[in-house]
Amino acid sequence: MRFRNLPAIVTLSAALIANIILMITGNNATNAMWQLLIVVIVFYIIGLIARKVLNAFFKEEEQDEEKADEDTEGDNLEENDEKEKEENESEVSEVSESSNEQE
Image (cartoon, helix red, strand yellow):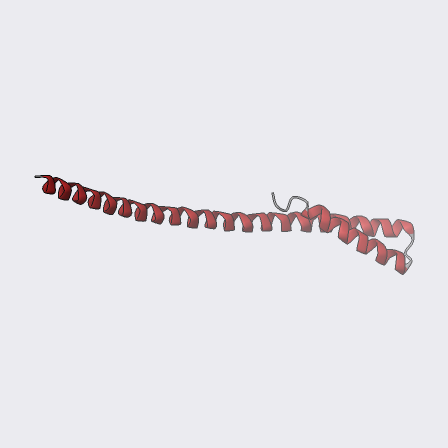
């Protein structure tokens, strides 16, 4: 969805450049319009293909980043579990020491 407007931008840019070139070369109007129509159609197709490729590339990249984030979260959860176990063990030892002192 990032590149939704890419075909339109590519097509309009190519049409503008082609129109300027056709005006400078002095082609007759009928011939220039046919050439411009061909340029528009070709560059619209190129824009569609480019959009599809770019969306697929960035979708893969986002999925890779999400996997990396999930892996990192999983590692963090394991580390947090280990820290909680250590804290619980220290609390248990403190409680047992205090109960030993009371006796």
